[in-house]
Length: 334
Image 1 (cartoon, helix red, strand yellow):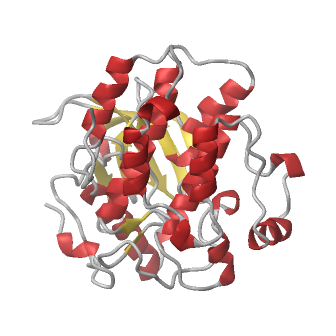
Image 2 (image 1 turned 60 degrees about the horizontal axis):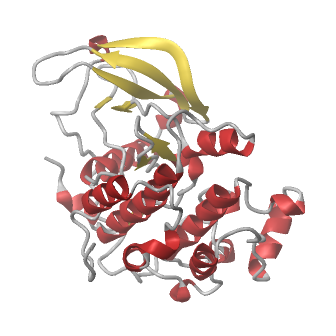
C-alpha cells in the first residue's frame, strides 16, 4: 500500500517503493518502437508476459535517462511522481502498473503504465485539424473526453494534488477514446483546502498553458490547473493551439499578453463553453471555478454543453456515472 503521508506537504518520504509494483524488465518484451521522447528519456511500447497474478498486458515503459537522476533531489522527484500517481485511483487517471529502479549499479529508473491505444489527445487534435477523423471518433467521444478530464482533475484536487502541467499532450486515450490524465512529474502535494497558496518553482509547466500568476513569481494555488483546463478546452474545441492567431508569440510576448489580461479568440466556440472557458482563464485566480464546480456545471447543464443530436446518450451517461465515483459532489446525475 502507498504511504498516505505522502499527501501532506513537506512530509513526502524519501522512498515510497511499493513492492507489489516493483518490476523486472526481464518480464517484458520491449519493442524498438519509440512512442514518446523528451528530455527525461524515451517511452517504448512493450508486452508484459503473464506471470502469477499479472495477466499479459500491452504497456508503455517510460525509461529515464541515466543522467537525469544523478542527485538526491532528482531521485526524490522520481519518487514523488510515483507516490502521487500510484495514490490517485480514478477512471480518468493513468494508472502505474510497475516501475524499476537501479540495484547494485545495474538497471535503470522507469515507470510502466498500460499502453493507450489511441495515443494522446494532442495527436487526435492534429488529425482532426487536417480533416482526418480517427476510426470510431464521434461527438460522444468528444463529450466524454471533456467530462472525463474535468472529473479526473476534480479528483486530483480533492486528493490535495496540483498537476501543474495539464495539457493535451498529457491526456492519453484508451481504445474507447476515454481519457487518462498522465505525467505527474511536475505535480505538487498541498495542504487540505483548495485555496491554499504555495510558493513553487517559477515557470514550471508548458508556457502556452501557464496562468499569469505563475510569471509573477508569487505563490499560487491549484487554480493554475483550472487556467490550463481553459487552454486545453480552447485547443480541443477550436483545433488550434492557443495564440496561433498571433503567430506563435515568443515567451516575452506571451507573458505580456497574459499580464495584460489578453486571451485567445473564442470565435466559433459555443456560448456555453465560451462562458466556461472565460471563467476558467479569469485573470483573478479566485474567480476561477474549482473543478468540483465545473463537474457539477457539466452535469446540471449537460443538455447545453453536450447538445449534438448525434451523441449516444446511453454511452455518455454510463461514462459520467462511473467518472463521478469517489467525487464529493453536491449534485446528482439524472
